[in-house]
Length: 194
Image 1 (cartoon, helix red, strand yellow):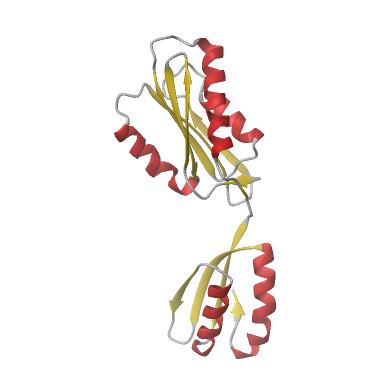
Image 2 (spheres, one colour):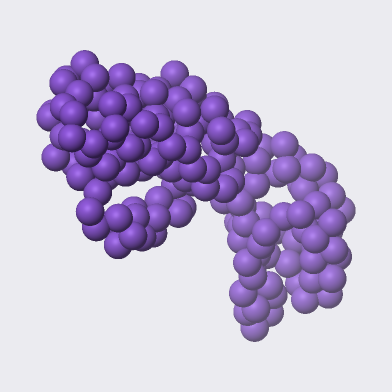
């Protein structure tokens, strides 16, 4: 599976209709959708599709035709996303009507081509599943764990309790295994995986 870290934009013109497509990380999808509605009030449609993983690692998909004939816009975009094995991303396509009706087949081709165009323009990355890791340690170990996380570019949150520190982060399986090797010697000093 593949994903993206940044928003990518592409434009396609089909029979005077303009299709402006955006490939976006899922975390930024809702904000971009609202922004596009505000920036493009004269657009005929803002079609979208998105794919994500739920807590059970199952693929969850959704799409909207946004007023286009049913099944002519959202589903073709979603099919292109499936074919590219995209996950944790969304595609938004702003359409300005050019005065020439495209017909059902024309809409399917135009939206599918627009999705392919933005994916081809994007810098795709391999998607790595991460899981939440929570552990606790004594205050004396804080500098060692901070140093480890900073040198391994791991993002963490922590809470300072009365007797210890509780750390929370997202790690891939590989990152977790390496971290547990590093942390194992500190078990006698108060390190404990929760």
